Length: 134
Image 1 (cartoon, rainbow, N blue to C red):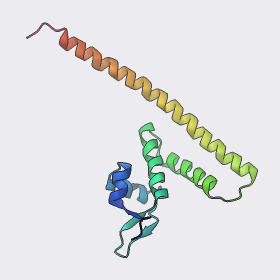
Image 2: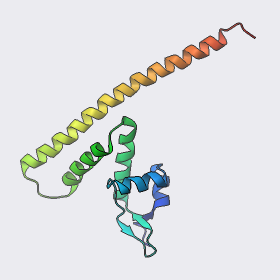
Image 3: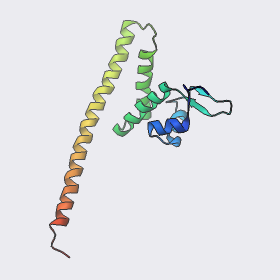
Image 4: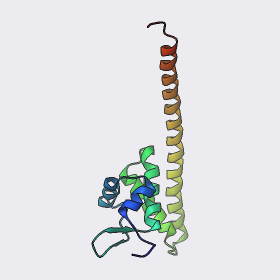
């Protein structure tokens, strides 16, 4: 096996995704191994790892599998080297911009939730340290 291909275990370690999760993303068509070994093992490239990292980063922001697929399809076309008509290229860029705006909004919502959770935890800690009960 050449150095450009990795087995699923190495990909799991690099992406911090479980083998089961990677297989699930394969079953749903989000990522497909670039090759198979003679023994039938999945083989991945750096591009496959990058794709999994996009998926991993979208997951905590609650993007659906369909949304992940839509973004990946848009970026795949933009990155394909295909000579796209200007209108098609602009449409794809607009889709990516929409995802960027949605991601920023979801990050802000998570920051708000985290702040509230930290306030709650601090309130509980204060209650415990300020308590005079034995």
